[in-house]
Amino acid sequence: MQNFELKNRAIREAFLKFKRENPEKMDRRIQLSWSNWGFGIEPLQVSVKRLADRGVRFIELHGNRYAPRLGYKTNEVERILSDHGVRCSGICGMFSKENELASNSGLVRQHALDYIERNLELGASLGAKYFLIVPGAVGRPQKIDDCEFERSVESLKMAATLFGKSGIRGAVEPIRSAEVSLVHTFNEAVRYIEAVGSSGIQHINGDVYHMQVEEQHIGETLWRAGERLANLHLADSNRCALGEGSLDLDTIIMSLYLIGFNNALCFATPEPLGPGGDPYPAMFGKPDGQLLDSMVKTTASTWSQREDFVRQL
Image 1 (spheres, rainbow, N blue to C red):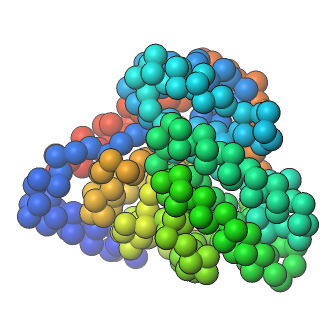
Image 2 (spheres, rainbow, N blue to C red):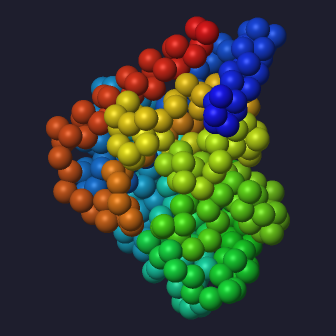
Image 3 (cartoon, rainbow, N blue to C red):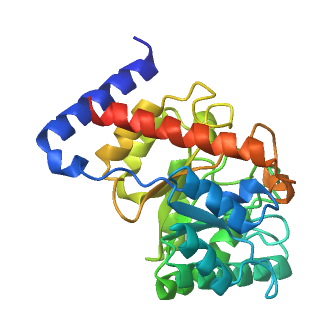
């Protein structure tokens, strides 16, 4: 057997033993959400209706409060979500060169702190469970200097109390080295979290697309992460809809059940953005409704089918 097959087998055996010995821990399914910033400039009510029509009852909202007068208005979002029976799972923090924690510009770092505060206010009002943090700028894989890590940690420490006050869990996302200059792996995320040293920022937001490049084995990494994992972004091996690539979803799902991920605070969140370097331009894209409908339908049905299969093993 190849090395990855040995690890797959170990996870499968552990899962079957866990299921046999803890049948009550299999009662609840994993909560499926969706990260909506990949829908581009599409109106929120259109996106939410699409998700509801396909049985997706949670949404990870684009953290689009880039300035005091920009982004989602709480009352409007509450009404749209309520109309379709959808709830907010979390807020996807978007960190670019204009608002990054690791910048060597004090003004940019202040923009990042203000950005975090505005979006945590939105999340708290909507019952969000997590806020996604990227230590450096997405789309800037070249490092600024050798002090990025220290500046990013120092910046986030300044915002740490905001997480405790909001009741929202800070979740650091490791991103592949082709897109960011620091924190590429789960181990590096743990080191970063420990350096920040805040009780409100103790979790990880995983992304299977990045994990394919940066981790030795996705399922094993998730299993080791345990309760640190707050949310898992999903896309197939080609960063397209689930079912359109070669991702081993079954092993991923088994690992998630092994760590008790099927609870009220954790979510599996598709974020199929397509292949490429910097994905952020997708947030300004003109949406193709038919394509997005197909992507959500294919992904939601594939996830449901594979979870059914794993649960019946």
